Length: 471
Image 1 (cartoon, one colour):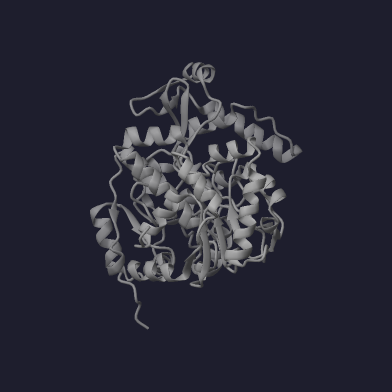
Image 2 (tube, helix red, strand yellow):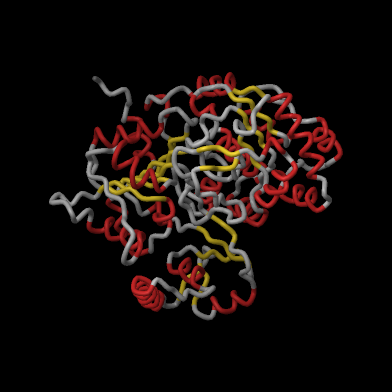
């Protein structure tokens, strides 16, 4: 049977720039098209980077790229990053062909040390979903500033460099050896900062104001790159490319043969039944100059003991308008308010049986305050709103979005002031992308109807604009 994809679209994008963006709606067939490209063209040096450990270790090598010799880094002596570096340099030495076909997670890829960058010049790097490129480093102020600058310097790009980082490798090797023998480690509070330093990831924006930011060489050193995503324009990774002067091109999705975006948006529009927010929240929106249910607003509601009364409205909404059982809904609000909401809302304290353990993306940049720590096969109906979509909740037909998620102010300030992109567009893209990732956990993922209540008004309007619907 003739292949339905036109790979010339990929080649044309690479002719314009070796870093190409495949930007298309969820469900358009991005992953299928790219894995088909890898199967049909059979490039030898490939590094496929995915957010999820199960994708890297099971789904890609055992299913989507089965029989092609893809290898993922193992744990053990030196850790996965060290083993990934060896795979990149030497390939899979367990086979006679010594194939250089590798799958790994975002976390392993973004922790590669500079000595691996030159090896990437041989590789086609496929990145599923945009990388988390920047995060503020909490608690690093003038004292740490003094310590770091006593042992290194900040260059013109605001990157920090150690005067000599060989000591780090020596200490870490001894630490790994000790851990493998005893199971105990002695890393102190400076370990992570020093590790970022030797990975060229320390970025000093101003005195006592430090960030973890990926080095551009992770992409620019590669032979060629495809980033599969949706909503790339004005995303954090787009800002990061602007800051670092990284040229990129776009793959023509129609020419490649992906499903039409307008058709997919129409499909999504038809599958969503919007449920109006309770009157109490509408009144709250009219009284407040800023959007309701941001992190700071939730904290105020909690401190003022207003959450119990709000939960009565939420229970009524779920029972009367959604007609949802407490086992057929997934919802989000800040994690630090989760237990209070569940205590006062009978309809939001349900449990869902999962077929496999709930999986979050393997990233070192996830907000630790919001990360999901539930690891059993029984999961609450609450989900953090800032992690990438999986299939675990695709049988759930009701969704409540009660969080106006905003980027960290210091990150937004840095990105807007150094990338040249508009801060309002960065915020709106951040909010919409996170919203779409969240709702695509539900039944719309399988092209089935879903009741959706988005309480924050501006956040809801962003989705209405995306769906070409009137406010």
